[in-house]
Length: 318
Ligand SMILES: Nc1ncnc2c1ncn2[C@@H]1O[C@H](COP(=O)(O)OP(=O)(O)OP(=O)(O)O)[C@@H](O)[C@H]1O
Image (cartoon, rainbow, N blue to C red; front, side, top):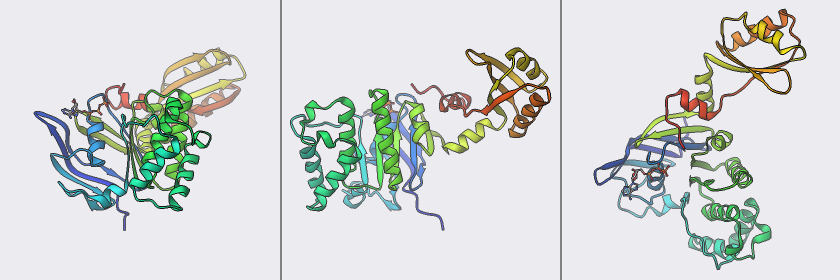
């Protein structure tokens, strides 16, 4: 028996006046996944996330969270209890301390002491704000504020966490911190949907990727499957030699599958683009060794998520 997906939507649709923002969307997110949602501005990502978070009423279609259906026009308190939602513009109350802010939200979820204090300590530790817990929110950096917002959205230990552009506007170090928190939450068993325009971040943390265009979900795959699909007949290899790079280049010319050779500066290395599968990679390595090239590095590199999307014919996302 297969496990019930954490998220399942059928023909989910949102229309604003004459504009269809989300169009008959069938989405499935399995338990424990980190699902990255990407797409150009206006593709409908925020509208989709808001519907999943019960912040926006669908025009048509159905949403199931852990197998239970969202009932239209009703409060759905049990379902909402399972959701954590971080919108891209949630207000923080500058005068409150970190602790009081989180305590306020924990009370809204009816958490009682001693569990409430214990949970506050847990999330404050997770988002690395122990040193700031008695400081006013106004004194926090942007990255700290975002970590605090993240803590607020998981205070009730939801099974599904919805993150709308959680790293936008953060510097690289702050983004790493948010990524690490997301990884920890996944390890704890949380299912996470995250929208972002920063594909390199998504490539680091996501297990699956969905692409939206004009309200439609045009792609929804496991990340590894995307990598495999796009690299089936196209390989990129980094090769370094102890000898002369010219000899390496000459040997590479003997393979008709080589499409492009880029000589890298510094150490004698080249980046090779070739057609073929993994067997062809192995054959190329043999060809070079038989030609007497002293290779000390032969590394097949993974494509970036960005280049995969371009290959798949989707528009650049930012
Ligand atoms: N409340 C609203 N009223 C009318 N139109 C809306 C409303 N909310 C969103 N839209 C429209 O729906 C479409 C989808 O918007 P949405 O914010 O969901 O896209 P997005 O993919 O999240 O974009 P971005 O990457 O810029 O955040 C857009 O054309 C937008 O103008």
